[in-house]
Amino acid sequence: MKEISSVKIKDRHKHLISLVRDNWVRLSWAMGCMLVIAACTSATAFLVKPILDDIFFKKDIAMLRIIPLAVILIYLIRGVGYYGQEYLMNYVGESIIRRLRNSLYDRIQDLPLSFFQREKTGVLMSRITNDVNIIKAMVSTAVTSSLRDVFTVIGLTGVIFYRDWKMAFFALVILPIAFYPVVEFGRRVRRVSTGCQEAMAEMTSFLHETFVGNKIVKAFGMESYEKDRFAEKTLSLFNLEMKAVKAKSLSSPVMEFLGGLGIAFVIWYGGSKVIEGTSTPGTFFSFMAAVLMLYDPVKKLSKLNNAIQQGLAAADRVFDIIERDPDIKEHPDPVQIQTGPHKVTFQNVFLKYDETMVLKNISLNAEAGEILALVGMSGGGKTSLVNLIPRFYDVTRGEILIDGTDIRKASISSLRKQIAVVTQDTILFNDTVRNNIAYGNRNASDEEIENAAKAAYAYNFIQSFPDKFDTMIGELGGRLSGGEKQRLCIARALLKDSPILILDEATSALDTESEMLVQKALENLMKGRTTFVIAHRLSTIGYAHRIAVIVNGQIVEQGNHEELLNADGEYSKLYRMQFDV
Image (cartoon, rainbow, N blue to C red; front, side):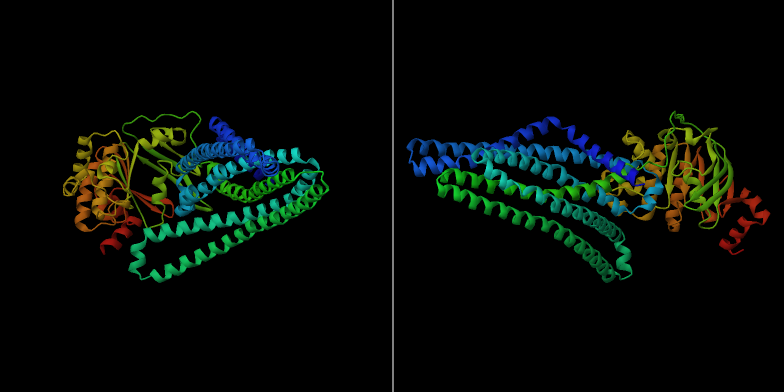
């Protein structure tokens, strides 16, 4: 298992490197700018000697005119280099993060329904926002600074070796000693950073739940309870962040102390040589300036290791999703299902969730254009059965056929094009009425959208809105009533015009008046379509051609209303319970 994990991490890093490599032109220009910055920094240290020896000691007027101009030119070029490097590296960083964010979102969208039932929405949001931003800090800021500082270190090292190679050797000998603690602190930062990112994801999930469910929070008077829960989460995050701060903060004092040792040696050794007359003050101060400038980028590199470790921890969380294989896989040579009337057949179908078998040996036919009602007590497996048709899940055993073709051999896109779904949970988007109706058919004309709204008995209430079809409906359709939302969902299904229809408790949450309108709209929707209707209220399925009764994942009865009542079985028992007969 360890071997597999290490290969995965290696592949992840290769993926990130390939994203960086795709921007090689801008990276090359940015590195050129960094070289310019490093050269200017080294030149600044180099000029200390002529400033002291030629101007202050030799009192050379010509050098007094030349050197200030040289300093101005150096700092002008350095400033241009900084601008170019910052712009180009941030462009590269933002570009990489955009592609990484798109890859992550694409993979999440491709994963099956079971994935979304296992994962928290807020955690997924945190991976796309918070974790990817941490990677951005590593890719753009950390990489930029590390490259620039490495070039600066190389340039300044050249200056000090040019001035006095013996003194330079002793000044730099302590750098390898600092390597081990910096790496060790980096490992700690990475471990703690993973915990911080998980805590942030939990907080995002908590915020999403409490904001969406704010009506329930207020209705039950649980504001204080939720405030306390949020305070616990922020305290947990605070404690983890402080652990990360401790680990990050330790690297600087170590580098400061080791740097102090090096500078103390330079002062003692260099000062001795000046006193003995074997070196000039200008050489000493030029060397000293270069060493002081040198330790600053070295210290920064130790801090950048922390940023890189945080970025790698975030990359692991992001690639955990990107590398996840979807359970629902496209057939290597998929069959394209053509639009038209379809017969749907279940043959000896079994379905297991985790370790529980929720459907057992289901065999069922729905003829083209037939309305098939599925009834039974809650938890019997009705929704699980219809979720198999669009391949939200795959069967554990058995097969589902559309016109004789196993749906696992069909193209997923062509399969789902044949199916429209209207559920009890009305899912609408914070967009216009028009765009919500046209969600499954983006090329629909205004006339087609209006006709769908009329057939769904939604046209009149839409016309009462200030902006009519261009009215924004709010998050999850929050500005609409339950009946209005349901009729927009029916209009959406009508406009998609799919030959197979799934109605999952489409009227159960409505009042009597809204239910009557929605029922009329559903009658328009079901015409000529192979329809699966899940209903608890038996009064709403009088139009069904056939009824299948599902108990504990098995079909125990099939027939029409009269036949099932006369059989005096499960259906008859349900009927008597509902109508008190």
